[in-house]
Length: 621
Image 1: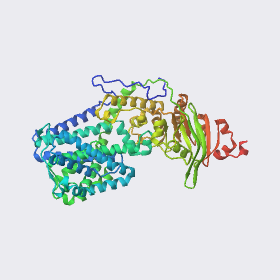
Image 2 (image 1 turned 90 degrees about the horizontal axis):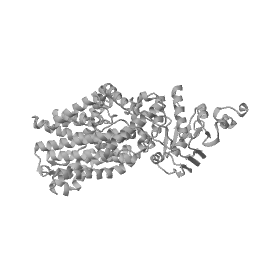
Image 3 (image 1 turned 60 degrees about the vertical axis):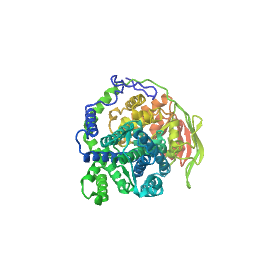
Image 4 (image 1 turned 180 degrees about the vertical axis):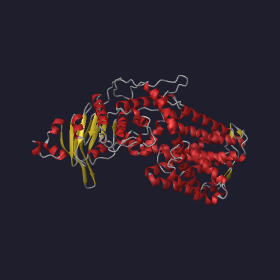
């Protein structure tokens, strides 16, 4: 088979499993089957614990674990997957509990099917109100905002005494489901059911393109914006999503205890949520359950725990951070990695192998122009009146010594910097003033001097992140596993594997991308940019660290992009490579264009030889 360049739209899809209607790319291995069987057995045991003769103490313990795991899951989504530290979970927990109590006491609304939507809407509103300013500040500022939210709970309760009954608290009646009052067993099923449904939602979301976007966001907001992700918008969505399980936990706790008071919502509880997240594994879907179970069982089992609570949580956090980097869930993953990887690789490779055939395509090459671009950093002139054009079907080389402004120019083109003067246009449309994610969506893809890859993601999935700018399944479709989700999976896997084959690195498709050697990482990054089907490709010193075999693969890939009509800007220190591949070359020196022309003209230019190669004009002659 002759390997060709691929467009995201022109892919042969994977075969379907006719019995299920799901993609044959999804693993159905012995390891996966065993894990599902264990999970089903666990769910059955938890759901039917009262019927199986579990004591009231055990059923209450399970409900408290469910409540704490819901809060911990909210933290995991915000911290473990989006990389934002927020301890506002207890505030949202209190908000859900008080809203449930208020509806029951003041409005006489105890119907679960009415209360739960109201609690979710309330959580979303609080998430938006606190998230918009907090996330704009970001980092430790967000942590401090959320910290004071927890400390302000008693003040809110006092100020809103008309609704909360102040420090005396609120006693609420038993919940109702379809008009039937729930007894202890019914309340147990309600609380456990809420937790199970939430974890099913979280699992489906994380194991989708949107989950991969969160991993990219956690690793590098710069990388996220370069593949078309609006960093602030995604962070806000994640923050709001993380608020929902916390508020649901508050509602569940109100139904369990039948009483809500401010004494329950302490900063110590916030520390316990953080400890459960770290101990269970903050970047694990089910780590929240592991951590919550260990902490809750320990809390209930040890006499006098409250006296030593802060010390125990502190020790937990220190020990886990030092010894168990990814928590208990990380240890479980490590133990199952070899068996699971062997099975998954075998299944997915056999499925994707049937989608090898692709056809020649025409890339949507678009002209990129820089007109009089200048950039000042204080008194430093990084760029001065740079004018150049990169045309479809050509490789435009950009060379110059270190500090000449090459990467600065790429950063201005991609929207990371705003030019002090001048403008950038793409296909006749002005890009100047656009945000970096808007530039990516306009059709520009780039690599970085130091490859930015994502921890905890296979090479195949990493390449698939380049397709984020293309049409994809919505979050709702991903959660509900609608046909559009499975279609996206098939197309992403097929396109990404084909690109890895084009670059000759398909053998690393199922290896963690952050475990690859530098040269292979660079090729994986090139594959990611190609997956976008962009109109222009900006390669920043992409040949650095490549051996001869990898360099040859890279050259062939760039030539295929050019021949398919794509626009390529190649920033390189490898002078022979630039001469071999480029149709036009621009030489930067001290932030200004020293010379422009064909490879032959540049090679014979005395000024270029003196500045870039180090030869004098006399030697050149």
